[in-house]
Amino acid sequence: MQTILSVKNLNKRYGALQALKNVSFEIQKGNVYGILGPNGSGKSTTLGIALNVVNKTSGEYSWFDGTMETHEALKKVGAIIERPNFYPYMTAKENLELVCKIKGINYSKVTEKLELVGLVERQYSKFSTFSLGMKQRLAIASALLNDPEILILDEPTNGLDPQGIHQIRDIIKQIASKGTTILLASHLLDEVEKVCTHVLVLRKGVILYTGLVDGMSANDVFFELQADDNDTLMSVLSVHPAVKNVAIDQGKVLVYLKENLEAKELNRFLFEKNIVLNHLIKRKNSLEEQFLELTEKN
Ligand code: ADP
Ligand code: MG
Image (cartoon, rainbow, N blue to C red; front, top):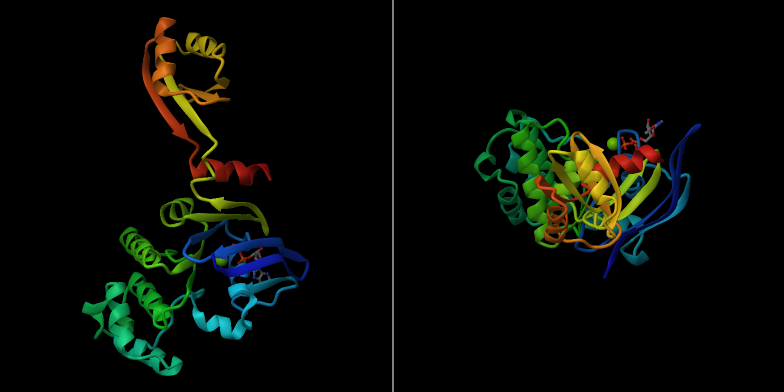
């Protein structure tokens, strides 16, 4: 597997404020990474340092296994870290052609990328007539003109309406499905859950978790039960050998396990003890619950 970006013990100070503390992570080719953290956690600072627009205080980062200098490597990186800005009086097509001209890219890429972001029909409209969502889509098309190895996006759906958000997320998934590595920063859990395969959870400049989005909750399977008499249900459950502990939340009995237990087995066990359930769900802790747990405890 090829490492696209490797960050080691990165620190950033803005005066007295330590914005990043020993941040380390690796971005592998073909995956979709989300840097997830509340506002002010250091997401944009991390991206800015990797893109050489913010100076690091200490630590290291290297692109493409350290095989090339940062300025060379950045030619293979497509990034949108600011509000998209193009010439307002020029059309979408003209704006992208200008980018091609500046970067020495064949004009044939313009139509291909406009198609990808669903703007072919609006290619002759002036940029000034575009909605924020369309502007953002044009920025994505522009960042992809040279077929970069990785696309970096900072809060790509901020300020968009629900339809615009949906369109951007679909486009990101489509780009990922073609093998482009993606790194996006977001403060939205559901965005990372919907779009990303991997997540880095950042809070106050510290990485709290890195790994698979699914892996975050893999070890946390539990049952949610309800019976007419929840008290009896809880006392019967507490003697089951597979049950670790039992809790009650909003009228539902939550059953945490120390070993695997199938829903069918649990149901049969309770029925034999004369307990009839009116609710049984096998659940995994959602990323949201895990995220809140992580960020509250630390
Ligand atoms: P995020 O993108 O997660 O919202 P940022 O990386 O923008 O977080 O900011 C991290 C912290 O650094 C915040 O406390 C922010 O106020 C501070 N910060 C960011 N940029 C600057 C700057 N240019 N000067 C001083 N402080 C900054
Ligand atoms: Mg930010």
